[in-house]
Image (cartoon, rainbow, N blue to C red; front, side, top):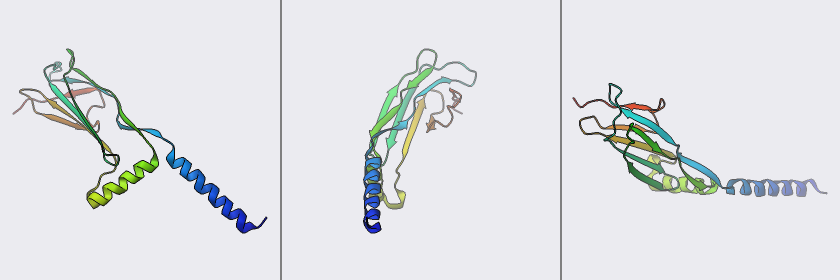
Length: 142
């Protein structure tokens, strides 16, 4: 067998496997599950808050938002937000974002949680920063 033909078959096999690999669907997490408690500076649970979670996956143009109230003990729960996709769709979405917004394009996922309580400062948490311990302490308005 000619080595040139063998190389051609090898390249075709690699291309075929690459196409299959980038077409395999997977679950992409936009926002992980969140569970936390809201308290005042003295450790008292706050139950009369309004909490808003919003999430975005820019390359896939997936957006969502939900408003909730905490439980009696000030606990808040948000389920995991995810989408089923594959690498090809994700890559194509990133190209479309770049074509639309140039260097200002975003391709990844982001999440924001806003906590609004009368008499307290509005608090925003981005991508889970600040709720690692499971407690959010909000301060009084000056």
